[in-house]
Picture 1 (cartoon, rainbow, N blue to C red):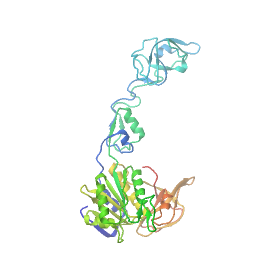
Picture 2: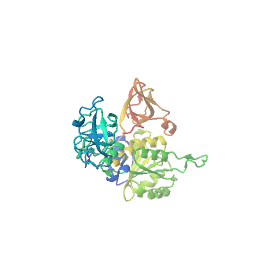
Picture 3: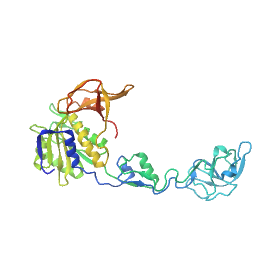
Picture 4: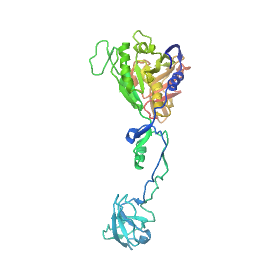
Length: 415
């Protein structure tokens, strides 16, 4: 953004989100150690360099045999074979098996050439020099064939796959130590307000504890980012700019809360407006109308300036910051998917604003339903904590009766 500007006309939610996403590109990918890549998006197609298993091996503890040598084995007509060796996992000393012999073999040990089946211990007397076999396996029984799980050249992980524990286990199993992925964005969170105090400090009659920075830092971490929660910044433009400057070196995104409305002590607007790189204005939503977005510093680090009321701040994060973090990480979809549910109680909504109503989502035998939680106040963080969903009421709807199907965002669902 080349110049700061404010607007009296309200932007739509889509317009502001488009403003944000247009100024962001995914972070550059690079090879990351497997454990560091957990939860990140693969930035390459990973093809297996080897087969799994890489050699024929035993699926049981028992005896490697030629099936034709034991085909008639039964309790009444047991087969006796000399035991010519023992093969443990990682011990491939016996390379070939002669006709009419057996070799003791452990699970995972390589099958010697000439053997085509394994007799489990349970079908034998577990002999050492000679083994008595009372049942016959079929050809290939209890044998893991080379490549039966993964063939060399198979596609293991597709570009864009979010890497979970099972993917990492598979990559390690084919010898990979790294995988190209986009890193976790580093998100710096600043709370502004001379009235704020850190939890654990004593309160005065006109001070409150800072919950916003914890709420936003936890939300950023839950989104997959690395969150840096900075100490409280007083309502002084110079103090704010100094704190911001100190943090830019470790920030891929900056998120502030408070100081963006129309008051006399809106320090964020006062400090950033002269830079000419941050937009401030209203968005047609409730809560969360006052918003700001732009870039700061020589590296043009994106900055979100969110409103200070906790519910407004959280819903602003969900609506704008969460998609930004996911774009930086190369994750799709960018925005939280929605579902539908039956509304249990009627709700009203202001005209021309998209309202996000805190709610409780449940599913019973009659299907999913959603119940509003608490009041409309954007300061009611207790109600926010008791909600697990948001009902989204469109801008052109002023009331929704009980029993109607509504659009719902599920806040605790992974996507």
